[in-house]
Image 1 (tube, rainbow, N blue to C red):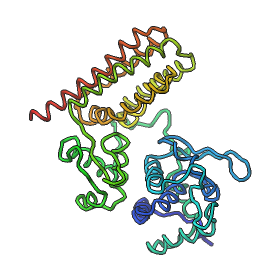
Image 2: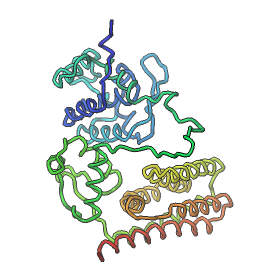
Image 3: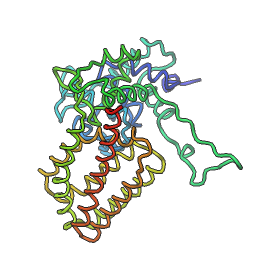
Image 4: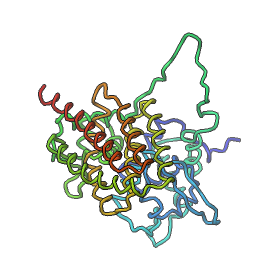
Length: 386
């Protein structure tokens, strides 16, 4: 006899349907995404506290001890779950030592029976048959999100003789909405300082609020806009003047940190930077822009943190948030941009660190920053002149 309590949500469309239904319920949406995307059992999820997730980034894992004292590790945080965590924290503003899914009746977590009834209520409202409780969510993770050994690519993929096929990538609704907003911002259709609401965007694009919220979260992370409590979503300023000022200040601060790092850089840090550099080359070959941007930032910030100057590091972090939109433009909009130049500049910086040569490190760092700014400047000029 079929165990309906462990039946999964059957399709990605139905998963999107549930997420849309929960879009305005940050706690419930987080519970759903946690259960379907991390691989954690519900009994463990309910014991999580805010401080265990608030600083996590995309690609990180949730690591903690369960009620039996055993070490538990989740799957890597997806971009979707990352945005849901941010949404929940910004809406609820919980204390660090609170349970993530705190009961309204006291300082303790929701009961498993309460959560089971809650989940069953979602399914009943959406008329999703044959599903019930937390086991259905865990089974959904097993079916749709967990990558089995058989699904991992072989080292030597089979290629039919005389034929080379490129995989076709289907665009998710979130990606379509993201690109629509991205293009509107960099083209000036959405002007700096303009206030947006999730509802107005969803109405214009004719989609539900959920993909809009995901897209706005990505754009905020990239520095294109800011969520303000009283004003909603506000578009940040992008201009040539802004770019030039950021570049001038970056050159001073980042060269200062790199000079110190060149003097004190450890073998362990050199090894980590070498590994990041190789990952960057691999992602460039695959054309994975999000990975390019993430690995580039991590490469630079590992260097700057080696200087052990926390105040300087904070100032650099602020500038990186401001420069991020221009880097997205560089890789996503500039046709024919040669990313192998970035690889060459990183190799120069890495060689300088290996030789403890502060002058060499700063030379290649300066070339890296100035060349990226030059190409973006050229792109901006082509837009405004046309």
